[in-house]
Amino acid sequence: MALAFLPGIGQAIYFRDKVSWQSPVPASESVTAAQARAWGGDVLWVDARPDPEFASDHIPGAVPLNEDRWNELFPQFLGTWAQGKKVVVYCSSQSCNLSRDVAVRLRKQTQPAMQNVFVLEGGWEEWLKTRR
Amino acid sequence: MKTHFFLGLFSLCLCASLRAELKWDQTVLELHPGLGDKEAVGHFKYQNIGKTPVRFKSVRTSCGCTAAQSQTEEVPPGDKGEITATFKIGDRTGTQIKTVTVETDDASHATTVLTLKSVLPEMLALNPSFVFWTAGEEAKSKTIVAKAGKDFAAKNLTVTSSNPDFLIKVEPSDSAGQWKINVQPKQTARAMAAALTIRPDFPKDAPKMFYANASVTGAPVMPPPVAKAPVPK
Image 1 (tube, each protein chain N blue to C red):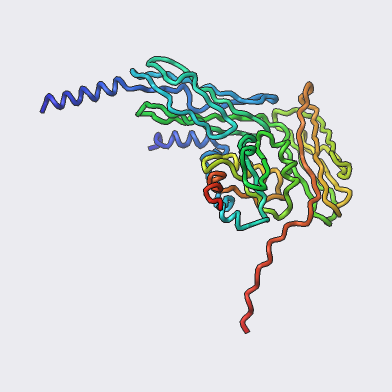
Image 2 (spheres, rainbow over the protein chains, first blue to last red; image 1 turned 180 degrees about the vertical axis):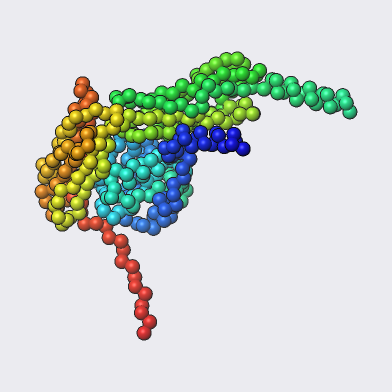
């Protein structure tokens, strides 16, 4: 019985830091496209995808913010942010983790300024599907 | 009946002995890139220990920041090879875990998930890296704490502001390798912003720069007023 637990314990110790790709975004930190749309002008859309994907197409009004060029893009993002605005971060699809990484970094590096940071469920793919 | 049984058993043994199988040296790699490194490269080595060739169907990564490629499409029995995973560090910090999903035509192990764990060097942590004042707020000083990681032997920091309307003062903290960066706007009546460039004296030959931001924002976005239900008379 103890042997059966060994691989699991080993993995838990090895990945003691949060395993981002296995950690679902808590429900309180994610938002559906419909919910975010309902917030109207109070939303600041943040595109966490790599630059070429943002250049190809993005949610209208979205600003790029990815960790490839964080130091350069973050000040630009701040230029569009206002206190009280809800920040909704998205990446390609449900399986990508870039939006979660950007959301976590935003909350951590800007606390207590920016706590209304959400991850868009399903990402860009979902937004395209539900686009009216 | 007996003949059928032995035929079946023989076929089963034949299939088992002829099956393809990729044996991986490691499916989890931990990398420790250096201070100035732009990328971290992991080599996942394998060998086909089966009796038939193995064909790669797909090699996918969990993140656009990681590229993975196989040297070959097909691995003959006994051959060795590797999947190379390249993680682009960019402006990332901390421990980064990315995966590579390999699909083959090996029915017994069709999918293998390879994990690349990149432990980026602890440099200078800024907490927070953004301070702000709302319009009309008292123009008091706010503090950014800069803390050097164990791999970062900085002794001094120089901080400059892109906007002279923000005053900057750097004080060493009580603990070694830690500083307080006090930022104060000259006014909060109108919106303004500044990029703060933080230059530690480390590494000596090519000091790394870090960035923080300060701004005086416009009036906060207020939530829409909630319509009050009429009070029954």
